[in-house]
Image 1: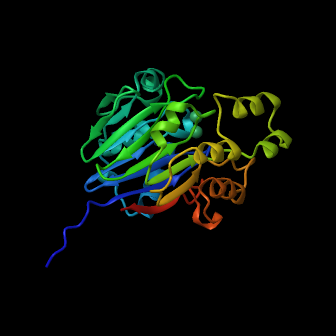
Image 2: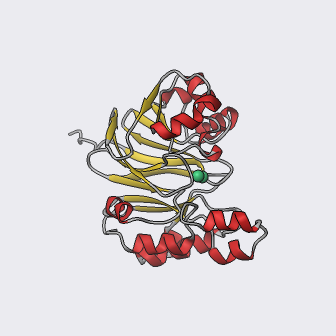
Image 3: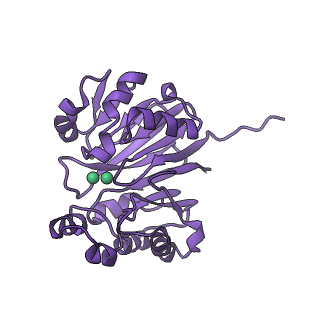
Amino acid sequence: MTQIKQPAFRFAYLGSGSKGNAALIQSNGTCVMLDCGFSARETASRLTRLDIEGKQITAIVLTHEHSDHISGAGVVARHYQIPIWTTAGTYRVIKQRMGDVPQVNIFDPHKNFEINDLMLQPFPVPHDAREPAQFVFTNGHHRLGILTDTGCSTPHIEAILSGCDALVMECNHDLEMLMNGSYPESLKLRVSGNQGHLDNETASELVSKLETSNLQHIVAAHLSEKNNESCLAKEALSDAVECTPEWVAIADQETGLSWREIS
Ligand SMILES: [Zn+2]
Ligand SMILES: [Zn+2]
């Protein structure tokens, strides 16, 4: 007897960090690329690593206008004829830099929308960008929450991320390493400010407030190469969900994260 297979719901990272971010979220034949911050050539070689061809990508969703999230978007969208989804505020600032693309769809960061088999639940985040959004992705059965590029948490963020089956959480820096490090004072303040990036401790506090009993995967992302160590991020998140540090995965700058299935 053939068994009815649950639709495969999985995610992976081409890479994550200040030199480039891109993730893939796939359900059945729908494959969304979240951010496109690598050059076209780099994107292609990283897609090959994940066994995906550019033409399989259904949509590119852009979270905000910082170059580590959009630098490849125009070229990649034109090359593979992929539609772009972004907020009106982000689109206004990237329009010229991105150039002509096959299709642009604007979403409201307070309204859910669908891209074929995936439902996207965007939510606004405090970050120094025009209209930044982060997401919960669902296939109707399971939820994947992704939060990077946020300076702090909000009750709205905590409500939305609660009860996810998989979480990707920004662990940008260790506050002490940042403050004792080589960044100029103004950059230290920007990164650690309420519209900057989450440090390990704040990420841990946020996760500890969430309902995590369904959690199958927890991934630390957007780690600073200068101001963090993967062991510190793993420790912080494992404290919050009371698991061993080894269970926490890292989406890093060079190798990204291989496919993780949510079932
Ligand atoms: Zn970023
Ligand atoms: Zn950013």
